[in-house]
Length: 371
Image (cartoon, rainbow, N blue to C red; front, side, top):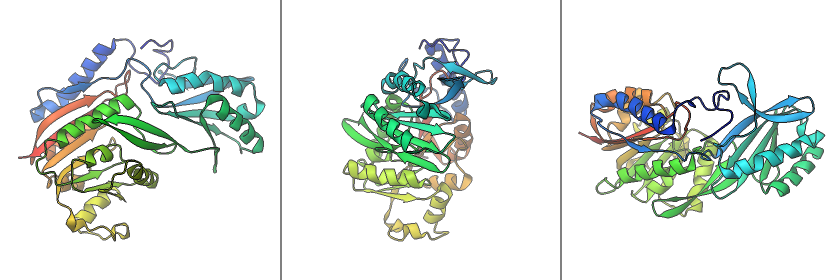
């Protein structure tokens, strides 16, 4: 990827080596962490060279009467104005300059505008959230509605204790996964995987592991989000129990279930620790009063925890399940958790997924079978 801001903009921290070298370094780093667990090689899923990121946030820099996009500097010394960002997908890129032009031509739109967030899809839907340090009135709404028409996009306004939705607060993504299309509602305030193409590879890698499971059985998922993995994986199991702490994500997951005509998933709002307490019968939850936990016979579990990794009680719980798919956004905590998990399980397959090119961040996954 060529970018005039490489080495200055803090959004990309790797800029002085080729992408091939960067990817090799990431593979070597993760392989070094996993080699104590007899991992000899990793499947590598690379990103597109540019236009790969489906969500982005830009600060708005005010210089007199002119607004510009800005990002924090790589050296942490203030901000740098941005004239381009070739990592965002085309539905974002093609709207960035037109909306900035309209902002600069309007006193109402630019007044105390703090930042702009873009959330887009591979099917050209785009939700643009304009964030202000002032209350938004009818004059803002009128001009923002004109922007929606001009940009063929959805516009939202946010300020302290205020959210103005003009059309919708979501976009509809369609991804071709494992031979069929899946629809996902992506909400403005919810978590979504940032790199659609690599996300598909990541899901299909998990499906490849699920296909190895004999006799299907039931599927348990923790940190399910909006059903990103859950929906495509559900057809390889009899019943699915998926948990997530975010109310918004559970709401979206249930909507996505209906959109894709999937009927064997039970989405429940539980934190990882609560899920463990419920399955170990240590505590009763009103949220589970309609769910017969005893009816599940889990053959496989998928966990996709935050950077902190798994807590010890969750590790102990999943050690009782035959097959574990562990998706990690932090290879260091993955390696830490594998110290315990490999006491009962062996790693059958492993991979890395480069969701964030030109940064040191890398996603990884392992599939473990009970010894």
